[in-house]
Image 1 (tube, helix red, strand yellow):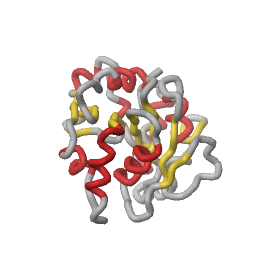
Image 2 (cartoon, one colour):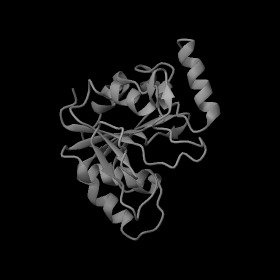
Image 3 (cartoon, one colour):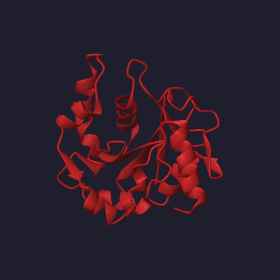
Length: 198
């Protein structure tokens, strides 16, 4: 159990490329949101969901994004403001293969850093990463001007430990954690992977 951390599932996206709400998509017998929560539940005392509007069918605690902010940073901001722990682990609701052993490993790398962010396919993966509540101020400062900001802008303002693929593969050999479902084609591929036991 990661005692000083809250898990935050980001479910406030508009799912434009998918064409329907991704969090509620049925996948391997449960919704994507339920699947991720189940995988993370052995690691965290509290799991909360960041969303733009209340989800009546979701039994997990919910926090609403600020209406004036949009995108992943809005969810991250709401989660950091709500969490009563020193850290949060933020994960997008469309990552059905999130690996608890990998998450637990990343949690062990936090000391001396404001964030721990994996690198997969040569790209940072900030939607499966740890963030310190101590840097809520940096995010608030970034967001206060009302402009559209990127996750990279936030990461550039804080101390980030980037974890390379070689390290990650010791705990998730196929790096399936970072397979996210943006389109119906992605969803179909993930479903086939599950059926084939990959």
